[in-house]
Amino acid sequence: MSVRGGSQSQGTRYSGYHHTREPAEDAELTHVRPGTPCGEYLRRFWQPILMASELGAEPRLVTVLGETLVIFRDGKGRVGLLHKHCVHRRASLEFGRVEENGLRCCYHGWLFAPDGAVLETPGEPPSSRLKDRVFQPAYPVREYKGLIFAYFGPPEETPEFPIFDTFELPGAESVTYCVPYGCNWLQIMDNSMDPVHSSFLHTSISGPQFSAIFGALPVVDYHERPLGFFYTNARRVGDHVWIRTHDNVAPNMAQSGAVTSLDGARERLFGRAGFSRWIVPVDDTHSKVLALRYFGPRSDPPRDADKTPEAFQMLEAGGLRDRPYDERRRQPSDFEAL
Image 1 (cartoon, helix red, strand yellow):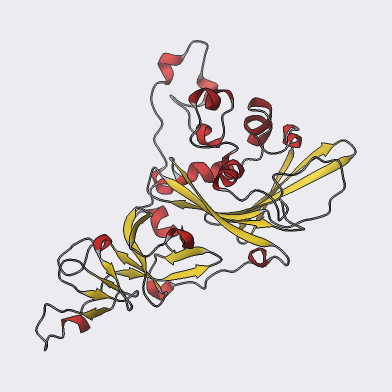
Image 2: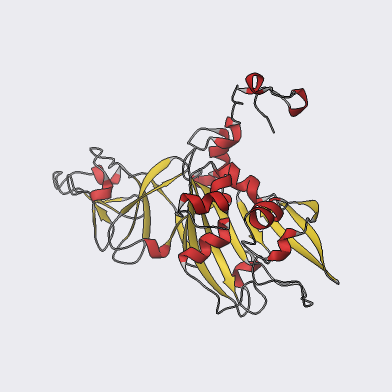
């Protein structure tokens, strides 16, 4: 990791003057707009873009991978994801009208199906075949477990929609959540891969934000596998050894083991994922986490645990985004660290 003015080994006491140059960002990984290396890579995977509960009766804007798009649900319940500007005269479809078969542009009344097909061009002559030759740019979507996913890559390369066994845990309830971050996606991904910071930021520095047993420094191992890697971190808690696993699935998905409701006082055999989460770039400087949180007998936490948005923010970052500055200063969370 780069530091100001060069490597850490080159520093001396009171050397601030020699370390004022900001290091260049790794644009290959941090830039996500169309045509960038990382943007094109991420576009080859299904990405969650919205909780289904966030999509109401009217069309709305959604920004993903640097593209601002319009999403809607037509009268038949189908979800459409279209480029923001109408292919006809560039009016914003954000102000369109949702109808039984699609979305009608407010400017000249063109009607678009969820797949981008032009169904009606009412201002054209009856003999016009324009609607058979023109399409509104659109992306395929898939609604699953309360999340809306989209694929942004070449249509001829559309991959199979991935369904992992963790999404269908017997006896478990899955609840969706979304948490926005004001930083690049790679910062959140790096945080997700770092089990050591939990001993400090989330425990000894700020007080226990998850479980007090995170305060013991872990013994960490990383293990590569075809879909990415996972790490194991082991801690001794009294007479027990607690081994926690965190699974990172390329390029931007993670599945975590137990986080809360643990004290290490009793023996507990292998459970299942506590949540599955996707770190989704909004643009180069903003991101959001969309996730499935599992509640059940083998999950963490139990089914009757708190399911409020505030609880999910605490799970994600160890603190709430909108707290008084003095509280954030005394008890920083991932929101402050990132």
